[in-house]
Length: 413
Image 1: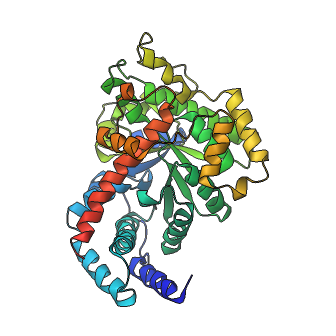
Image 2: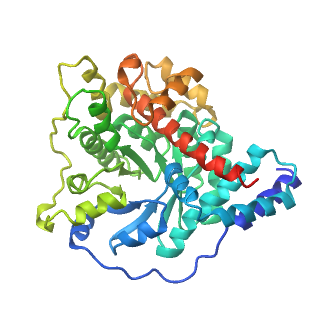
């Protein structure tokens, strides 16, 4: 790092950093939430909005998670406008020659830190902070910004990194440095099995609500229990891994939870990250603690019409075949895995017949962005794996929200 860039890095750190003061606040308890804790489930709130978090907070909650969409909602409210103005002024004093793109990225880093630190200051719990989506295929930038996030608040920040080839390899390096990682945008048991064995992040995710919705929106069935089946299958795979290999410590987050019924059904999951509305739905469901039990290991029949030709694409979401496990064995025994690049990992998968990383073109990504969070499956060949397509759809959706956030920052430059 040059002297100028070191000076900029130091200035950005000072702008982002806050001393965490005060004790963890007292909060009311909930017997329904206590039951989830008793069954082994850690509970997080899924919001970047401080007031929404305060209105929902209970003693049994352990963390919060933010993402690009949630951060954009906070920024568009105007609550960060003063911080953006001050950050622009301070950065220009130390690095006036930055391009607008570089300046927006650095301001965005500070803003994301500030949004998360507001939550840390209020609740004194861990908070997930997410990288800019533009870094998702750049391993060196992913490593750099993850380390910078961790340096700002090592006691409370968990760094969210999206599931890409570069992400797998970056997380492997960062975990060797003991940086806590939430490896996000997972949609299948096999994606998370690979993550746990290759990279051992603290957390992986299944965005279960979107899996139910992709069935509904594509008229493939009711969508009932599709995401739940994938989530519980992933949990079982991780439980087996942790039992057989004590070096694997990865926990599962059930994400994209839509309602209180899902909260109840996923009791026993390692972690649930729950939007405030779904939390209120669970707390006001009329259930008693005795109604809540773990469904891990249950045989679930998902609401997918078996007669539909697209139905066969879904089984890959909850299956981790022996052939896939042998592929992971081979990858880990390859002496060059720590020197791999993202394209090399893609090539390794292709060589071994594993369809995790399709080479989406620029036009493909544009179509994914147009479709939004839920892809139109009829427009994609079955050679593209559903989990891979869902991950790219989620990433492009976040990128769209990040673009809106970046545009608000640009309005102050």
